[in-house]
Length: 286
Length: 269
Image 1 (cartoon, one colour):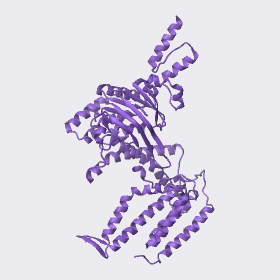
Image 2 (image 1 turned 120 degrees about the horizontal axis):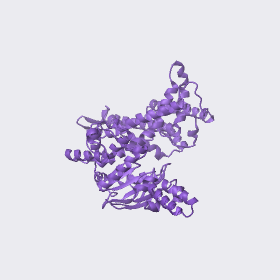
Image 3 (image 1 turned 180 degrees about the vertical axis):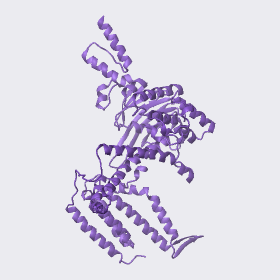
Image 4 (image 1 turned 90 degrees about the horizontal axis):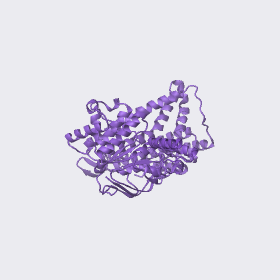
């Protein structure tokens, strides 16, 4: 499902000492099926933008269309929006509350007023989708699981609503490298199998470069850059001024470029960098 | 909505009120609360109200900010008013079956409402104008003499510091959990009372879990910095009384005297 955001503005604490313009005229079109990565330093408006997309925050001005439904008009049904747009917050494991994993995953579908059989089916699909074994885990208390597994269960809770757009706010924050990789490949698989639009925020530039079809950079409530990862990460100096960086692979090739003037590369991933370096070395050897 | 509770919040500033010693402000607040219960007619409340208005003006805290805190306890006020209107016996002016409104009821309801509002604004002025850390330091010093008879004044003050410090944190946490559950289609606004109470479970359980996690982290962080209770502990900022505090003390005594005197002004009705 596509998303169209038009001239979105939102101010926190209007008229109070902590008044801040979190979003300042943000416009954005996301095509169906895109993987959109959002980067930006803390307080740049990323999370605020995400929360607008499923109606948790009402904008001060501007419009949002999900498909062809305007969710900022007054008469839209919120449950319908929440069904179409699944939002996974930062550290989603802290929202778990039920006695068993199955019941917790069923919370969303139950709120949609589905039949018991349909809820059952969705819970099974969602748990499998996040790479867990239903029979093994369904009756376990979510509080007895490891951090990475809790997070999968929480994500399953959103997937069970079968959204057409899935939004993840820093899905890998605070995980160890193994769990980090697992979650990323899981997110990738969910996108491919469910054929949904995926939006995710990350501070890991390597992940963003690898995962996204398109990247937007938020800064002070505006979109500073918008394009393919290659386009966006070509603005290394501007990004570093915003407190951001380029992917580690790009960092490496830039440092080589500084020493070897005839070396050329715009690698974003480690594989690309390795290929470019190998090619350069082989050419140099003759 | 949940952020609107200003009770226990600090409003940064450098006003005369902000600069007073925390002990002065604690005592002044106690005096004010006591005085609100000494008052027995509307003249007294007029005086107490004017006194509070002067303090608010001096503190430079925006009135809008203070009143936002009232919206949170609006229900309590309404409840008190309704109970008082219908439950007071006296000269009946309206009656329907067992419900009746009396002149005395109306007057008493108004009286209670004013008292509650002043009470809440008065005590929130203390927290609005005093950094929580100063407040508890002040409290600790005030309670110090009682430690001779075994009252753990430092521990009490510390518990208060922690409680105050974590009000905004837990509110933020609550806000986050509410949003996360709303994103999963939770509905907190419709349904009958039982459904509504039930709908709180998905908020309360994660909130409890988070609180325990935060408490554990905090305890560890304190131990890691060798916290071992109050004995032998020194502080970076010692608090001292200044001239302003002397002025405040005089004002307080005068205020209390006027309030007591107001009891003898004949009531309006």
